[in-house]
Amino acid sequence: MNNRKTAFLTRACIALCAAVAPTMLLGQLTIEEELATREPFILQAEDQLRVTFPGAPELDGNLQIRRDGVISVPILGEMVAAGKTPRQLEAQLADAFEDQLVSNEVSVVVLQSSFTYYLEGEIRGPGIIKSFRQLSVLEAIIAAGGVNKTTGKLKSVVVIRREGDTYKRFDLDLNAVLDGKTDSAFVLESHDIVSVPQRIW
Image (cartoon, rainbow, N blue to C red):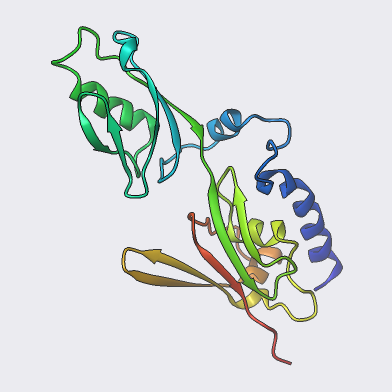
């Protein structure tokens, strides 16, 4: 790896260290402020929500999206929340309560969200990484300490993603990103597996 790539990885690693520490704030931002910078924010399983009804405060409460993507809403029962933005969920709740409340105004605030990534292979810190925001595959590798310079092969990084009962494979050339040949960022989804293969001499 040439000096320019090494310097790039070093600077990016410093910038990302706060993003992946499970018990730390992102830089000087709160979790809520960091989440607000992501547009659009897509709700996912295990997100913690605060749902408030200005016209019916007795219905206010904190809800967690279950692993099946569903929340249990007072009076209404179960409702799919995962895959929607907070604004879309607000609209859905408002429509559902239209005939039951004097005011069907609803507010949905994300209290906590986290993304989990699994990294293996020729990475300095393989294992599980948690972040309060989505990371690109390059950011995730840097956050794990970067690749092993002598053995890691950035040209053939593999991402494995589970979709239902099947796995989907993505083959990525991160050298092209570092060399400026492409500016497309591959953004990881929670629970993606990132594998950096060993360089064969």
